[in-house]
Image 1 (cartoon, rainbow, N blue to C red):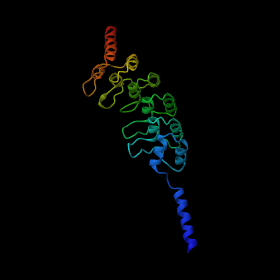
Image 2: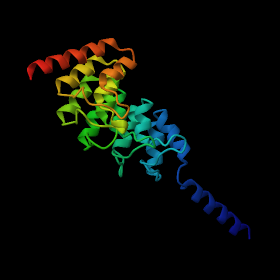
Image 3: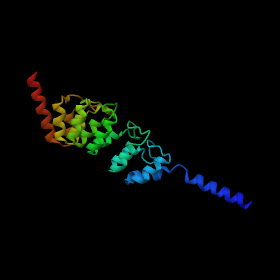
Image 4: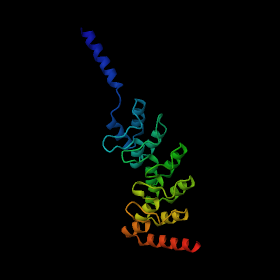
Length: 216
């Protein structure tokens, strides 16, 4: 009887040691850039694309958001990783990398085939909002839609104008962004800039529109 009980306890302990890792522990490890912990839990069967229960962020997005750059690379190399997976709010890894000024991550994701153009918000919207010109140029060179329409028909130019990103506004206009387009609110990029009290952006767009009219 004692031998059977001891054997049962050993089997129970063995099963516990091979149990799937807890998602909460995994996402904590991702957030704090715990490379060994993340790698170990991936080997134990953690799904690298599983969103966290609290905010619905996928691991790649969480790693980029929290500047866990070494863990980001581990996740990017993980078997079965889906670089087009979306967090609950629609963010992809490429969008977050663009917003967080992570040029190396943008290049790494593009090298693995990340889509530049997709429905809804795009990486160009996020890079324009952040005013990251090098990342914007990379995306535009890869045929990013300069007038991509996000929800409410907001374009990257509108987003950059609202945030007062003068360099981004100039770059988008030089690539042919249409400043006459309107969002579902009925606002143009100039009106977004006016609402955000960005007179410098208003002046840039109005000057570009006048120059374009003279060329016609």
